[in-house]
Length: 328
Image (cartoon, rainbow, N blue to C red; front, side, top):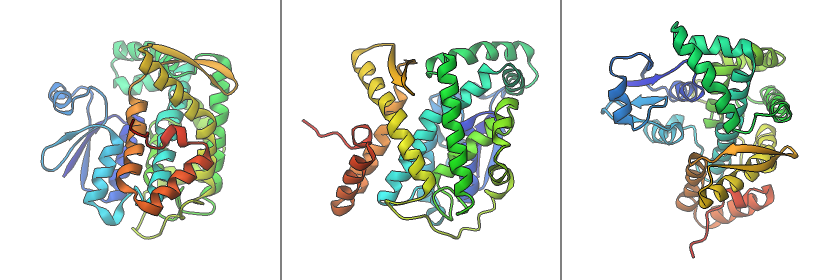
């Protein structure tokens, strides 16, 4: 039995919950906040963040993408990362959702008073002092992720609207976003819906314009019978192609600027986003996360597959962002 410690309002908790459901793994969900053993959980997991997964052999794991990769090894018939070049495509799409679109979830939650009130009370579990503290933290998170100004808030919302439209159109053609079986990409989208935009009052109004998506996220997605296949590389699905274009236009420049800031030891940096300068807090994790993709390419692809992916990344405008770096 696996135990998932997390929060119903946490995107990454709900992402991992979706993965456990798709894998068919036996698990129990437990709220982490307020537990008497929370310090022990955090000590063993090495983080105060959620989610944390307790495995049957007693490991305490954090970081959802490597956890899903591990679960793929344990439930290979229900794997969520495709093998070969398609696995690279899937991980880049997931990366964009994880590290870029997640900031829009944060913006919707903390820049709109009704959503901030709703979410802070839900997270705090009735502790009004904690809810007030959480509401004060939220806008700081927005400032750190490039959505402080009205221009960038509107641009992030427009980008999310395009994502919803692409997903809604894709689900008219296939059961899931990369074909007729779920992938890690579906887990990430479901995490955003189930933790944020299906429940927070303001983004809920946006998502309700796409009833097919709402039905999929609320009921249909979990009902996978283990059959179906993904669309093939490099064409994949229209949804994936839309995401890759957005990633090249907006996420790749952020990654490059964040890497330069890390190298310079700068605490913050500015980079043009949607045509205007935006300010971001320099963070280690985007570098670590894209390192997982580079590692997948360098360690799991050989010969023609590696050449095919190298050529594809160049054509997508994503080679600088994700191609393994030559050692000098």
